[in-house]
Image (cartoon, rainbow, N blue to C red):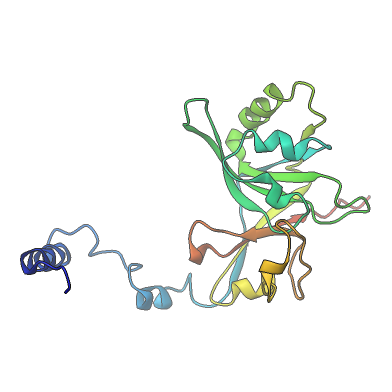
Length: 214
């Protein structure tokens, strides 16, 4: 026998109906609350790419990098130990308050791969503070931290087919150890990740800036 209360069901219906029919509802003027509205929005129609300004890049290198960051961030660094896609993470105070939110990417190339090199993508105004925060905890860790903002450019790719530029996931991921690097066809960049904060935010990719010709 199903346990349900007709009074609660009716009350829920009234609350939902009144919420969406209020004349003073703050959501009436926003177009992006329905899929159809998003489809009509020129910004979201088709596939697009654009540079993401005001972001700073810190490079961390050294044999203790994974262990060092594992003790400071909210995500799980061993996922990136053998390369692959980057992820979203945060740095917290000892009281658990958010200091910085960042994206961390393994550098998936180079003659010494998988020599531990990672790139941190953070808000440009907070880069000096984050740099100082990292150096404060280095102690004797074999990790070098440097500002690589001038070396890398960050790009965003979004649209209905944006994720196709990042390649398809492996058919049987359960057979692969966590953090294994997966080579994918038609991948638009070596360093990047899918932005997990919202599906419509697409991809974030890091590419080296063109060196000035002499």
